[in-house]
Length: 221
Image (cartoon, rainbow, N blue to C red; front, side, top):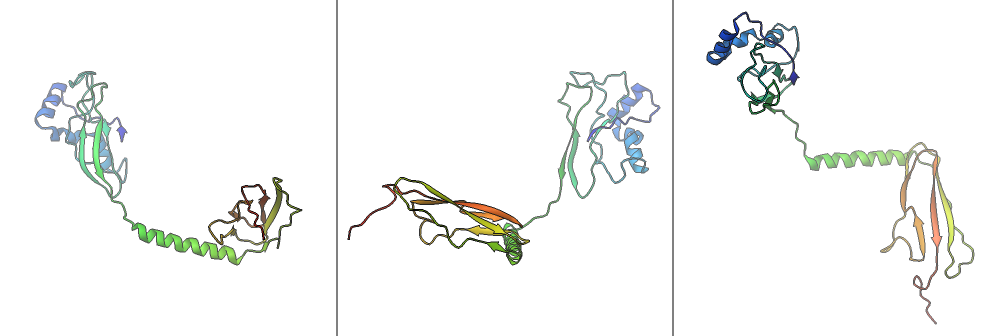
């Protein structure tokens, strides 16, 4: 789409040309350079254009709809299409008067494939599961068996780092699983709770303990 600047190969006097455009515009279209070039395969091969059923788009007096007689009228502004689409409407916009050209517009229907979202999600989940299984088959993890702390005192923060190492060739996925409503008690914290460890990489998990009067309860025997 654009100002392709093709003119008319016509030897008619200007006044005769204008009269023909008013009376029989379809006869003038046979002189259109762009239509001839497309038909003879000299330009825009593979493209086509809907039938011209609007006046030439050039050259107008700015601010109105009268032709500027310093130039022969011509269909300079065009919309070409390619592929499996249908043009419902092809016209110019005479109401636009700020230029010596008239813009062109087209309503085009383009066929699109329809996909069932439920089926797409099912297939995506299958692929995701296969990727996870493939990764797990090639995972070799080094995981410490325990994390030790010193004597724990009230209102004293203690932190330890748990290093998870993946020595395999696939991604390793980890997650701390909850046994009740929370992953851990209020008096200790684990970060991150889940993640992905790339091949031949490590991930540091922080474990923090803090006993304060709000996080524990002492019961007397």
